[in-house]
Amino acid sequence: MTQKERMEAGLVYDPADQEIMDDQAQRLELMYDFNACRPSEYEKRTELLHRMLGKMGEGCYIEPPFRANWAGKHLYLGNHVYVNFNLTIVDDADIFIGDKVMIGPNVTIATANHPIAPELRARALQYNRSVHIGNNVWIGAGAILLPGISIGDNSVIGAGSVVTKDIPANVVAVGNPCKVLREIGERDQTYFYKSERIDWDNLK
Image (tube, rainbow, N blue to C red; front, side):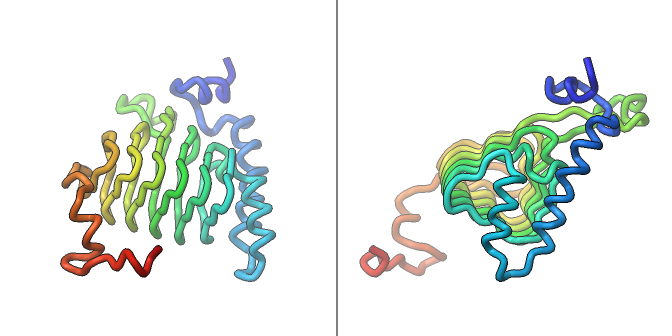
């Protein structure tokens, strides 16, 4: 079994394997071109994203700079995903993001991990676990999502949170480690910020 096959099988492997590094190097050239685009070159950026990402649905937007181990090869976006500045993804395994997801600035999503065994870490070996983000999720600025976690539909991850375990659907979760603060409920249909009411009639 090659190191790349071990990587794809979720086993401990050597990320410095030449076959792996050669594949990465070609893809990183595309990411460099994407980050070097002028703000007015929207169509060029979109075309590059389609070449870089595993999948990009309709109406998606990633604000440069964008950093990724594989230039997004293992990133799968649904429709109408918005990503703000400085998204960093360690996309050695798949990252699945649903529809209508918003990601704030300076977010990190990691799929790679290193064994605790000192002998294996001394050899810089690693393993990977996929990340799953549901539909209509909002991830606040500076959040960190660790390998193997899932976030359920409609949930909000507070700014600066470190998500170490799965988060269910329809909740607000915050902190380090990130924990469920409360469920999204009726009050959220009335107020958008503290005691400020949503003017629903003007938003229809």
